[in-house]
Length: 178
Image (cartoon, rainbow, N blue to C red; front, side, top):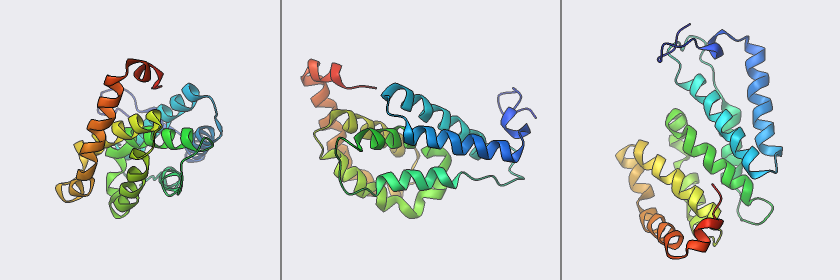
């Protein structure tokens, strides 16, 4: 099968059980990995898998990735930020920014959970977390419908504040890990 780019879509030709194993193991890898750069590489992999699932031209098999959505919201519903979960939250934000366009329709009913989570994240002094939140917000603003965009309007100030904090202290900016 050829995809939109004209290249062969390998995902579409894979066995269903093999796809399940790939999705499950990649999600487990994101959850269990402690090394920042490796964890974010797994986020890229998850994003590619989600793209193959939700952006497929052939939707005959109605494949879903509900475990990914469940994982994201299990992270976004945590009620505090600490050293033990900040990297996990960052990874969820990176993943969300990469897959939001593919799963937006599935998230519409849970937009308020994102809004509440972003309120907490932007109040944090953790600049890594705030920059990841800013990245996710810019992606969200590009995709959400107007009525949902109103729910995120309050974050414009925090996005600007985060950007200014990174620019006003060059040493702080170099410490922010992407």
